[in-house]
Image (cartoon, rainbow, N blue to C red):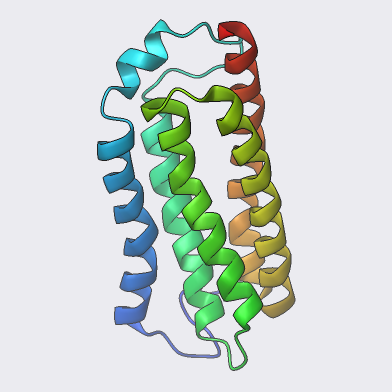
Length: 162
């Protein structure tokens, strides 16, 4: 099975664009919002299940690529919906906002509320994607799982650091 082919076709330019938007957006957000994230993260009290800081950019790069691939698949469907498109855009914006709330502005409680909303939007996006394309829906599952884990981590850090 070729996950790049949708209804028998591959549009390389569109594929590249749909993957680069979240990957580059995440990198830029990371550079701006989390400039001192490693230092900040190292000073925070963390729950026992917190990973080392190097895990985050590795995981996020993969997740951004897979969500971009999922969105590419949806965009090539004969009847893409404005609902699926809007949900994807909203969740991506919320995703980028979280880094500012948590790291740049130190608003751990607001970041927790926001990540809960983000998880809901990702779940709705995933549901919409499953309705249109099973592969696109499956590509979103690791993202849902990671953000659920990140939400628990955010909560733990918030509670431990006041």
